[in-house]
Image (tube, rainbow, N blue to C red; front, side, top):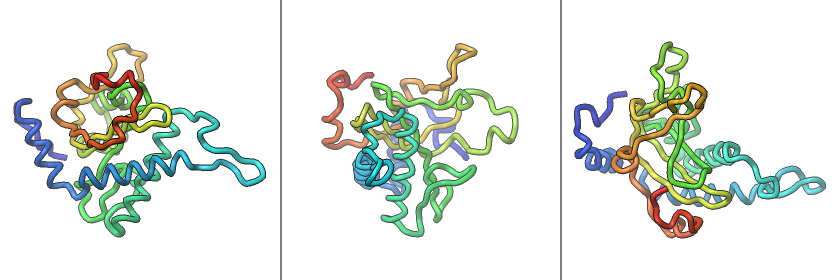
Length: 207
């Protein structure tokens, strides 16, 4: 997928991001509303039946499980709000598949660590050596989700290029991260009162 940032200086990134987000069919307001509803549904989930069951919150599920379930609920909510236009991705498709224009499809990345950073698999920061590794295009639109425990702390929407991801230097590291300029200029924060619910450790907004 061609990058809208190709050949642009970092000083131009913020305006490019605003332009591509404005042209996207998913608005920040829609993303926030669908996310908050999906987050509420997630934590109201009941595991098991009336005889032997318990609220999801009682088992303190791993962040990866929460992120996966949230993504699926979010995709379902989009499909309900915009029938015939969006559904959850399958196979090599992005997590949120746009039926009317595949180029608008969106990848979701979530982190349950304390802070506002997100991470990809180590492969995101490595040169792709074969076709199998490149099944899912890692460049394109992204919704990023930060949460801590049962609190949704930050939503962002923008564009990340595959070349933005930087693999951990340690040969045993399993994650890839993003440089500060990507957070600053390529991911727009989706505001709202929900941000005020974050833990006090995030009050400076720099983590």
